[in-house]
Length: 534
Image 1: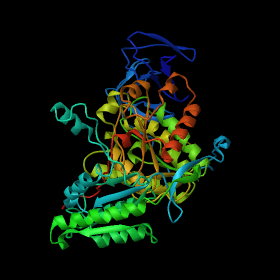
Image 2: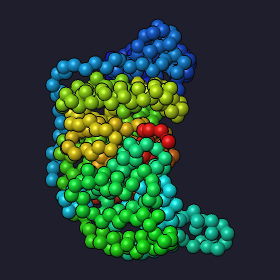
Image 3: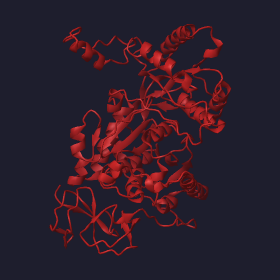
Image 4: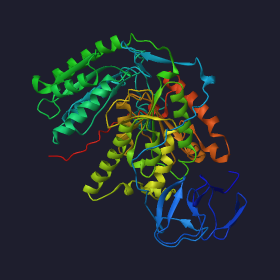
């Protein structure tokens, strides 16, 4: 890093410390001299002006907090002297939003090797998916996973082989990976979950809708579904959701209801026999060149730090803009982490009804949080706070930069499909897995996930690329991180890194680059349960 301080926006009342600052250190920034009052940790902020108790402070050009006590110029801004505060959201007439699309002439005519389904939709992988309608079938799903993954060459159990080596039973023997009999099927993927019964019918319907979206996803060739029989999430409810998701759904959908079988063993043998037949059919699919307009990316952050909104998120935002300019789609999630930037997002909505829907959803989310005795202000985790994101508004101001600057074409509720090219907003929690699960349910075929602290989150059917905000993280966790945006902090132009990241997305979508989460077999799925258990 060539400088110690960064001012993100001209209107900001704080500077970002790009390295640890000692007490009494005299620094120069933009011709202005400033002396620190007490130490300031790297990634944290220090006051650019004296602030009285009650003053509102800005970062990224928006209000991110209110001083709870006097803060001196050069003093660290912390949870001890700043609390979460955002500007009040006003709905009204907004000027027409002007966006200068990036130049994508250098990408003209470029393609990736995608999976083209019978209806013309394009995927980035060719998976068979296995899931239960109710948690009672999770053990059977796990039994199927053990019966399929390694025998069909989709997994090695390196830890088990290591243990055998320690015992002297397989010393120096490399893990055995059988030849894959279905080489054009990228994987057989398995979902388990904690839903389907014991809760409200509304939650059961929402779960079925999300599972139907996964079944219909162009990355899925066919599905195997296990049902117990007596649960809330009935087979008929799932079929209804599937018809609503896609009235023309025509993929193999193999459903088994355990309570109708004479024994579990008989059912499981039938499941495996039918699965192998389905895989033989899915293996007939071949990748073929498709335009970059077929990209539909989801953008997400997790394990964020004080550099995420400066390096990784803006680079991802530029990639989002490039994808939109190429005719593709991008989906920005995590409504609790859009708190304080509503005005900017409202101005970018193309349709008045989307502006209203966005505000209504944000208010409903806050009301739901208050109903259980909390608020969106409690979103930042201890790790976020320790690494410089001390209020939800501060975290949100940096998180929103993942969405770039393109107009917003749709505002979606959890589980709704992103059907239009362009940028959509998707109502999800900040929870990493609940959010990524929803992005994929909305149709994302590659997910970009920024992190400053490190997180392993993946998905069963869509590649999740991890983008580091800082180089030390990328060097420390190379098995987890796919791309390093740390060079931005040293002066590398974000646009240059965005072009490199889009190239990686292109390779990932085409099957040439397996994401780190895929290599780790990190296949996470969590359903956002909104109601209580009964």
